[in-house]
Length: 198
Image: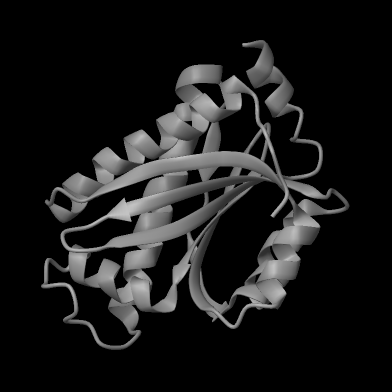
């Protein structure tokens, strides 16, 4: 996958967002589990979609629109089987208890999506004085290519690059990898210039 470096300011916002989200996540499940920031970069959408369309991965995705003077679409996705582990964590059950996707797995992804999107909004407000209001999360279970086509491409418009944040969930006995995308709606991408100058 083609990756481009991002500015220090944008990386700092990503790191702070994940750090705050990790604290909230740990309190939510009352466990030592945490979300660890891995890397953030600008990805070429053509490479992302090519990989997504060639994959047969079924994922559970939460997307949240962040509305304000600058508006974004926040997308978080996780493999279908890993949503079951999140459900067990939030329900405080032994990992492996949930055997198939159900309303609890959907709610778990919705809750994590809400936590992550809200912390992104709070970090923007605290550090660059930009107010973002998260809309209610919407959860979709589908193949990765279909998710990209309907929810990611729509927000990109005619642009070909996207801010990608990769993280890892450290759980009691296992780790879960997931990815997040923060997509400025057309006209809102200038927020990154403001961040670079702050």
